[in-house]
Length: 423
Image 1 (cartoon, rainbow, N blue to C red):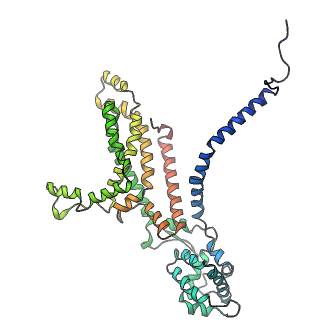
Image 2 (image 1 turned 90 degrees about the horizontal axis):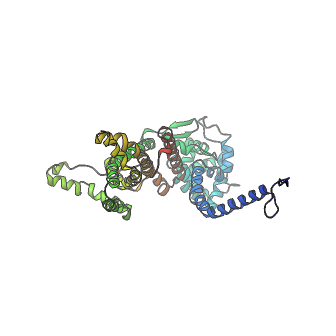
Image 3 (image 1 turned 45 degrees about the horizontal axis):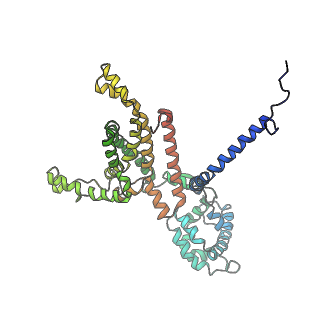
């Protein structure tokens, strides 16, 4: 009998060890798969990851003061902001040298705009002073303290220098403090004056109204989804077209239509007056407030709740409910104990989708919400496009992102994200 056993490692057809050949084959497959998804990874990196990282960095970046006034920042370290006395001549001389360079490079107005976020009037002071300071010679025109005060009274105000010193750090928590109605001062973090405390209120309003909108969508979407899942296919498809119809209309058009309908001379009020349900001199105020925002956003986000619910309900076997009824269960018992538990994953998926969309909406609240129905996202849009305070906008966006992630984590712990599905 011949011994057919082989000593040493098994070899592939090309003579290389089988283990090494398999490892090389797997490595080639991984590289081929990576090459196939590389365009998608690059797109996600450029359009999603880098903008978010840039936003996170912008919320703490504050190098403009130190870059524009390097000599002044050094002298400010030697000045006691709590002394109650103005800085000495050395600081004014250093500030003049820095300003002459900044004016030539046209960066002093950007610095003024940055400091104006912290103290009103700084922007105009830098801009107006620049015309006169540009005429000074840092080498021969000293002393500069009295000359700068003559150019603008603000340079003789101790609060001006306290503000510059406080915000001269390259990495700051000032934007985040402003985002929670506080401010950075030489004495530490302090609360903003009461007339400026609005952002925490906006955060609370945004969360509360987003939850109300989500709950409203659940109440309205559940019976619609149930009908779509239980009616014959031909009728269900026709109704599904009506559900999808809003997606074929511009968001701006739908929101503007609600503005027309909700105003005091709009369709809803006119109909109620015609029916005699409301007096002509007591028309309902359902626009430019929270109620108008909730109505418009519920209508706009309703399809995003219906579709996940419908996809889950469609997978629930009708035989389960028939079996329950055959065993003596009532219609309510069958629904509550058999059907509803199986539809919860669809409710969870739709709730997450609607809530996240609602918390970031700003077009609809801006049009129909007035001053009482706007979200924190409207404030972010304002700082990006109007006030150009991108640092504060980035801080507000970062906090909003953190809140959403925290709520997502809580949802996962309480309900379980594994229980969420789309069918």
